[in-house]
Length: 397
Image (cartoon, one colour):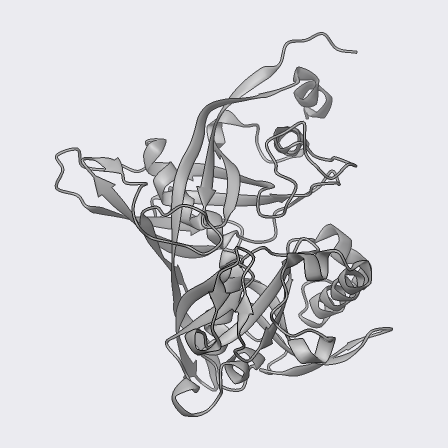
């Protein structure tokens, strides 16, 4: 048993959208490798066989077991580099394969807070546009951060379903959001037949936009599209089916070569299911009327139904809605005025969200120039995280 004192590392704890994460300045951590991963795992309280992350800052959900590393960008036309790690709750594993769209809203405010992005102090600046290089996906995100008297404005009246209290709005633009791992539609089709041995064959839209996502029709998998977390997360057989769909979809998308590799790529792809509008009651008890939404969407993250919607999956939803013939587009009404909507409002377990995208065809291929949505962000705590010293000594290179 080691009697060494704990080491302390500067960190900032933020909410971004409907997620929370621990943010670090890159020079305060070891270089990429086992030592850095070990520190981040310990900070969040993973791996925890109890699944609670009691001995760390994680809150036992995919939305709250997240780490972010920021650095001043040397890339032309960018202010800050943003690296995201999805920290497994019960395994000694960090998935670096994708972005967190919700925490993207906190990157600009945190970068300003850390002094990585300058803001005029004379009160003339009311919005600081922060150009973010998303290092996981090699994409640009543009955040429009509200400024008051030379400081990030965090309070406001922007309400976001899934977040209890209002805050200041942070509009985001995800530039050319098709994932860097291949074509926007990796199979070349907007709808495929996805064969999942032992489970069935399903119509699926496989898309790389925001984050690789597999869209299914809710009715095809025995769902309504009105499900809340308890309806899915307490059904182990359903979760197993979704994981099988995710694994075989990852193979079909070319993200992995064998189904067995899905276990080491938990963050991507996502699985989501869509349905036409229906009345339902959100997790807060707020009624959602069919007339107020274009479609319903539910999505799984890290093997569980998400309590609201991942920001990157929202980008995928907006993008797919803008391409005629996808399952998302069809669930939103297809044809007519919905053929290529610039934005859609979708219902999720916590309420509703509007997301927009600009899609067009170039040389017979669909491309999206940008996707747009608004989130909010707030610093919850700042200071130092403490980690037992042996974590670093045992994992030093």
